[in-house]
Image 1: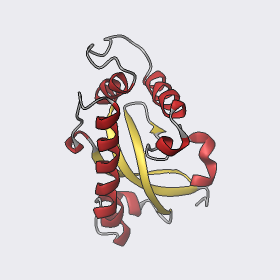
Image 2 (image 1 turned 180 degrees about the vertical axis):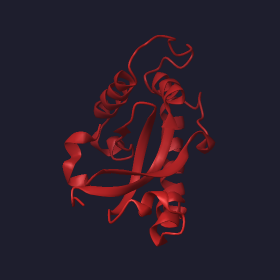
Image 3 (image 1 turned 120 degrees about the horizontal axis):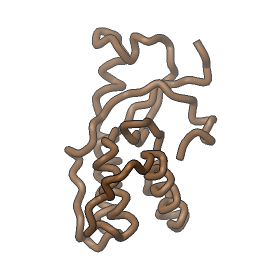
Image 4 (image 1 turned 90 degrees about the vertical axis):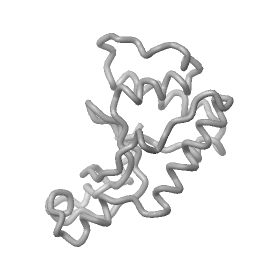
Length: 148
């Protein structure tokens, strides 16, 4: 077991919804997302580029992302990794804690979606229902070079 790994809890968004999300952020929300073979990694880079154009104060309101081939993951909190059961076994004491959002998690998502709504002039509103709360095994936050 590596101390480099932790169990991250956060919100997951499927790649097609993420593409639409990026188009809204970049001001192209009126167009449908391109139907091409563009890599989902390219969309992750678009988000990162948009995020780094923000002021430091606004950047603090936007989460970093972790990339997966089929989903984008917005981490909100983590706990030390002890065993695979934390992720896979609903009877494990950590499972419910890591797989169910608490009030702080819900508030973070709400603040972020409100910020996105305000920055696009109120034209588009993304629903919290688009996001799935889950847990993943990933690197410790000290390894931020892996985070977009």
